[in-house]
Length: 338
Ligand code: FUB
Image (cartoon, rainbow, N blue to C red; front, top):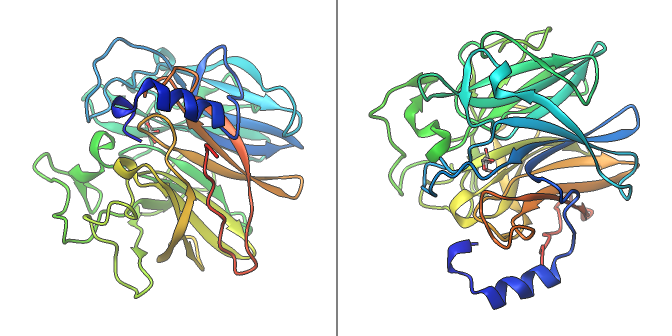
């Protein structure tokens, strides 16, 4: 939704009709990655602040500096802010812009995976470790070798393998990379060319490095053709997430400039994934970002909007809504303002 084009009356009406309230309202939060650890819900969001940087297409106004972990005893419980879990000043390789993180658990340790710009202004992805799901997390001295771009989502498959999905175009810099190599002259494909795909890499056993060369994921249409760059209501923009439902792999993502959360289904973690539909219609605010998590046998979409800040696009709030599946495995689209 083009937040700067909406009238105040329309905004008030949408806020009134919102299907969910912000989970926390004392700070701004976004990009929620939700997990259940030991029977309790933990949400790993970005922590939005007003860094005083003017709005641009590069997302420079998203000047976040730290992460807070939000926890909930149950899906209807009060959401608790557990304080600063990691600050950019404690990440040796990072300079700024602590964007959308995720977390996972293995062998008694919790791993926060997060993007930030390095001292040369290039986004990379780092790991920080804690004994507790709420941190504090200690950052590794260097980013993951060969990592780039934004929005990492780490997925544990049923065989115990872990995969990190990542990437985002425009401010997320994915268009500067081809075959995992940076070149300043690279730009987005033309509208009639295949869109850039998200990237996936299996992780090493210690979850600190990629175990393989990252691979570009194919998102195809119903005829098996790659989605085109001009197909911006369906093509990948940012905000990767992976979940498994009834044995199928659901890759979900944001279409960015058209503001949908969509999904595509495959039969293995690498794809190809066939575009299937929309999970979430546009929210108040430019960005849309989500995670999908099963809690006590029901499935939930964690997402954000800018209702609490009255439409300020970089001051967002995390929310949750139940998602439902049809018998054919399709997901019913959520309209965030009924
Ligand atoms: O929060 C900063 C950026 O906005 C994220 O990395 C994107 O997914 C979008 O939500």
